[in-house]
Length: 392
Image (cartoon, rainbow, N blue to C red; front, side):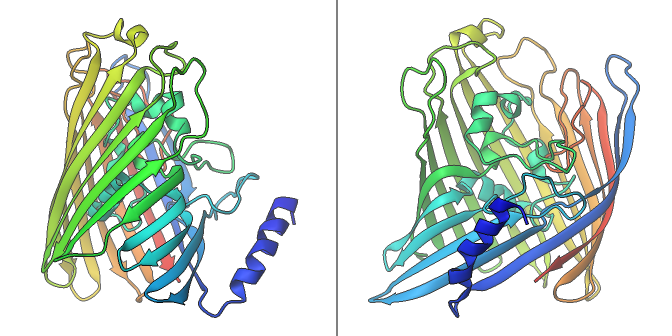
């Protein structure tokens, strides 16, 4: 056993000794055929067959009652790579925190999903908000510029990769977990719950003029067949100006809102609206039409029950033109998914789905999870996946 795994296991022993500790997890493997075609410059398409672990995970969580309405709780959750585990795989790569529950709400600190990421996950039709159909393919990316910005990427959690070192996740900075985060969640009042979060950014970018910060705000309502939810996140990079290789942005923010209406046992229809805005550094602004960039994205979703154990899942999204860009068709793309799930038991699901992203002009969006990694501008990204998901 490698040293770091030994010490992590040793750390868990006293936690597992408590009767209230829960072991849980998900094993989610898909066999996929993915590729690209129709690049704007005539570049030949490519295709690959692979096995992906999607949102496979293992976790431990516990709770201790302290009296007077107080309780302490904790969670330690980690990614799993069943197909080809990378040598750097370790504990705590997913939401991991310690918290205190009180009559006035809950406070927790650690590695935490911000409200923007939670909103996307609540409305996504894919179990675990994962795979080639997830809405993170288009959300919050500002024409893919944000997902490639080195400084903004460093604020989020480590990006999962396969055993060959290939990046699996190409989502926006609003769809990654927050490091060094503290978060407060209010008690539910008439179905309403509020969340406020702050990321204590511990590293300072080269040339930064002030301390970077991340602020989060979320609001959700659950009542009857309705779920309504919204979130806001603002990231201040701490940089007034820098080389574009460091960052192109002084500040970025994202606002998203949506909900769904449930009917029957599992069926629902929903809508998600997403707006992202970025204030450029003077150096970066010289390459654009102005001092800022903005973009709107929307997704419509549907889950339709079929028989006693089956579901049709589908979602369709469009990203609008990147406002502030010199390219007339920059940032525009369409993403569609159609799939079928069948529950073999309460814990095990068979699934099959097809997903496609049609990039327009200079756009080069990739799948948000299980990405291809090299998408020529204007090409169509497509994928077929079949797999098995088991939770315990």
